[in-house]
Image 1 (cartoon, rainbow, N blue to C red):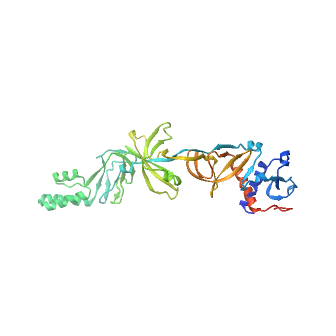
Image 2 (spheres, helix red, strand yellow):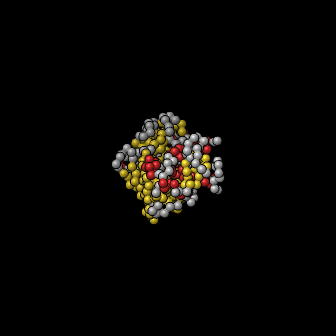
Length: 401
């Protein structure tokens, strides 16, 4: 006997104890047709007459009106229903909004991030930025660069100026521009006609130093990213959407964002961009929101709760999401038929929003679904249906295993 069969047997035993009343027959029960008798601790043990189970317990009768047409309905005594805490809700037609509750994080606005690379190799001198997070302004000197190639290019330009050769001057000036020497430095060189051993490098924008890859005196190449500058006047918020909700989200949809460190405050925005592929590890779709950030209240890598408001689905049959039983292979609900009768029914679920889920097929408006205790009832109903499928004929006399 494998582990699955052992678990099924234990479940059947527990459910038999919970759902089977003591075998005290009333006057009404004496008029009901008995199909067979089963052992309280083993529903697979059947006989066509009263007796004792292998464990010495009295066999309990199974009546014809308990079997149901499909073998999936059961009857539970009122006191057992009360002990199980069974609660129900009515399936109804309603409008269901595609509300997506998810999480995200604040990130730099990549359209306002600049990376500092050089167009020649050389050595860092007089580094003005010491650590990540420092704030810089546009035009601020970041460091000086000593590069033999830059020195040679300046000398060629000075020689061209002294010779008065317009073609050489034009070519030398173009080389200086190609090597990234600032225009102000070229004008100073043209005026003084004296080359400089080091060339200053300036910040192209306002922002903070998000990465710093160099230190004083380091040798760098054009492939080296010296540092990155990020402007925090606006930020991105990247949210992740479950794969099954990926078709709910569209650009332009309204959103509400809240951050744990500022309870009670909300930011209203819209979906700006939907990334074209899913994350292969988390199986989520990334969407991007953008927010202006006066005072830099929103800081990169902050955690955020995101609510995306999708469109509504009209005329949907909805039930509480807690009533839906997902087994991995199918979805079911337990229907309360009245007078203690319950049936397990296979359904097809649609969109889920908040505490509600739409049902595409399987139930009708007005059906009463079980929202508490449904797992026990569904297990008993499934066990009974499986047992009847294994024993489709009439029970024979004697041992009916």
